[in-house]
Image (cartoon, rainbow, N blue to C red; front, top):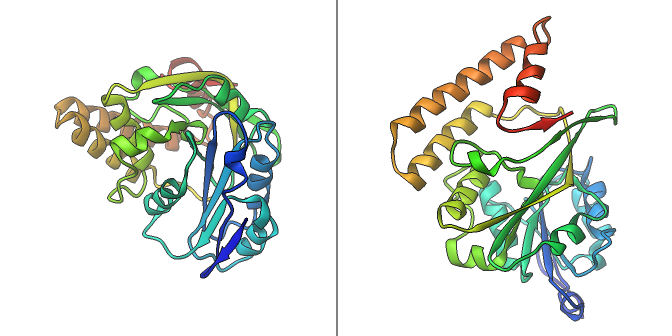
Length: 281
């Protein structure tokens, strides 16, 4: 029986474990995300696979986010709204609450394909990390490019599509959750730790998650610095890490300089023909 807790919480876990098969926990963290959150929620609740435990962690939104969450209150396993210490902290709150065999994290402005979780469960193995493809969309609603992962270069850079990643809960229990010292590349640091531990990664060659292009620009340079730190922490300090860091910074700055110029075709050529992180158009 569901019951509401003080401070904007709801707990409703009795129904999920009555289903059969792999229980999948999906976590969405959000802060002032009223613009797209409802589409995100609907994409989870309308999945063809039904044995899902959906958890939403809100960082104390001041817009209409909580009204949207309350609209779906009875269909959520758990939700909470309170200030946090950043993205990693919010992720960890969700993981702590998760009781599923497999845990996925869906951003508050992304959405799953209808068969996304079904396709993941079909390939599920205990003690594994599953991951797939991501479809980008332009602001006008048209399809952009599809991003495909490349596990082989994960030791070099973030080459998986984290919104498509599902991790066995036992791996979080064994190797830990997100490091609060990472503000941007916490997902890379986590996956690198699992990779270095010899965890099995399973690639599902299907579109799992959709993501919009545009919006607020990410702190790319800060992210690259954290990627360098993650590699040094996991593999030890190496001169090759520093060299690759300078290469990625140079690559990014050149790409930025060519954007919206007559030479922008070079960026397209690099992404589709040369880049080790394959992006198929």
